[in-house]
Amino acid sequence: MSEVRTPFSKLQRNKHLPFGDRQDRPYYSKSILSVSQFSRSDIAYIFGVAREMHQMVARVGCFDLLRGKVLANLFYEPSTRTASSFVAAMERLGGSVVAINEVRYSSVSKGESLRDTVRTLECYADVIVLRHPEVGAAAIAADAARKPVINAGDGIGEHPTQALLDLYTIREELGTLDGLTVTLLGDLLHGRTVHSLAQLLAHYDNTTIRYVSPESLRMPAELVATLNDSGVTQTEHTDLGDVLGETDVLYVTRIQKERFADPGSYKKVQGSYTITPELLTGAKERMIVMHPLPRVGEIVEAVDEDPRAAYFRQMEYGMYVRMALLALVLGKA
Ligand code: NCD
Image (cartoon, rainbow, N blue to C red; front, side, top):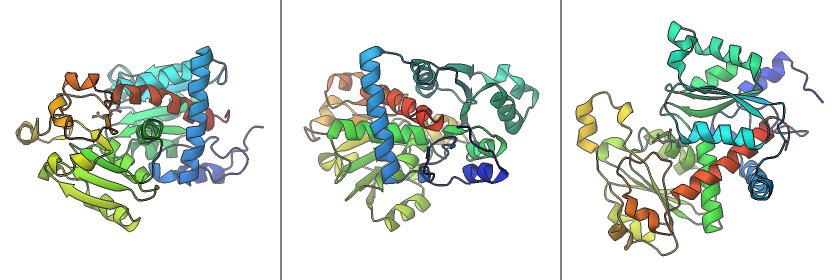
């Protein structure tokens, strides 16, 4: 059944209504712009589909659920994992990808607007994945487009698909999302992954979030205030030692060098935290270390041997979550 496209249905999609608000195929044709679109039951549903994707990949590798569908992967900022996992997700589902990873070789370098670029790509593709340096760019793209747009990171704003895969990783590794103490470490001011993840954690019972960062890179105060209103216990620290021992999930981020106005202020906070095997002797036996990656020295390679190091498994979970999201948005799950 093809969807009737009225101005109202376009408006609805672009107003970021809750993800699952339609009864027939609730996720079909929805843009994914912000984690605020997802309820706890949406997340449970997505995770169920992701688990099926995992089983199918283990069993048959690739299958034809999205055969004939095309994804446009439009990246205005560098990416290894997000870009390639969307490609792998689409291809494992039998679909294909138009990749624009180097916008400097596209008409963007001639001054084409984001709106026009998106309207071009939707002529060729069924869904657009967008990474852009400006906060709100994905919402602008979704407003211009008739096809769904998936936000793969908008500046220091949000990274909703990363947050979903982060949450999925925690669920798979620790078996629950309730009652956890999650420590977010590093550049909490500029890190879009932590902005999105903190909001998703607020859906679960008795969540405690410990923020550990240099003074100048604290979690945005508005976000802390919002989570406070939703009943999340939160505290801020500069010293990881204050909270490491009670931590169930240690989520490490890099200091985001490219977001600093001048190299001097980056230098002041560079290398603020380094996770080593010795440091982890003070952590719980049953805990996990996560990182969205890339790492630039925050976790030394020797930690990779520790079974608690979950960051490589986290990447693999990411492909299953992105397979689920593509299947749902394209109306096939
Ligand atoms: C993150 C990002 O791009 O926000 N990486 C990712 O998507 N896996 C984190 C980062 O760049 O530090």
